[in-house]
Image (cartoon, rainbow, N blue to C red; front, side, top):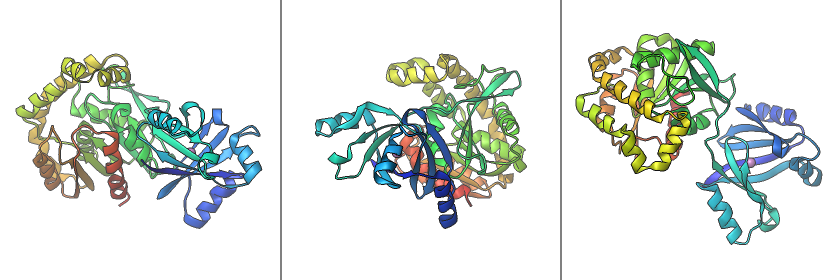
Length: 383
Ligand code: CO
């Protein structure tokens, strides 16, 4: 649980935006309309997140607030792990949550409010993250299409976000996208054959994934971008920096290894066994299958085949010594796929690298890990 944002009711959003820009040099990183609440929200990152609330019509709760109390602090929002449990808990404690259940709010959240008469005059919002995605833009790529999702203000520096093998933006990198959009225009892509992208038109190789990522940069008319990659996505970023250094500003690679041997391949094959996966965690498996459009089995089979191609790349790893792109190399100290030594080797090999080891973090990128990693990535990329 932590303070997620401060909600501020504004009568004239343009004037308030201008005030924060003049006073603190802050401009909103995102503006989002929530029609069912009749509000337009403007998000500012001032260390703490500010949510400026602008009424869209006279029936909006924000309009009624402005009438009664004028402009100013509207609510405090606390983020909880399980917003449904928090709702039930609040009811048990005798609070009267507004509404029958948590409802969709801005910024990919589900939220509910407690009435200020129960909370000593301060309207309290409790919110939880969802995996709601922005609309996809499909980029043509050599016989198929790649799904892309954008986050934040297109005027900010572009950042390409790359997920791991057999993953997808919605499954892995979404929490990172939501953190990084405060500073960057985040373009997250689903690799070929993964997630919301079209069927794979060619067998997967590192080179093919890198070509797809370049096609996305071209489609967004982005000459140069920061690259942030998780696991396979980090390997793709390193390859792009090797082949096309002028397209990469800075990069961050997390839980990434390019020096594959037969032992690692067989460990990865075991992780990519769909039957074992479905038996162990049936709910996670159905979620994977849904996000992969009902083709999780073929995604896993393709990833297994791809993994077998990786040891052939190992002789080229030494070429990474030529990559001058500033790179943040990070990994969890409890990574259960790649030994820590692989991360240290990569860090030592890259001439302009910095190192971050996250305590207690395993290979899978969980939302809580993303929230630990994001501030390191944001400050590294900012230079
Ligand atoms: Co709020």
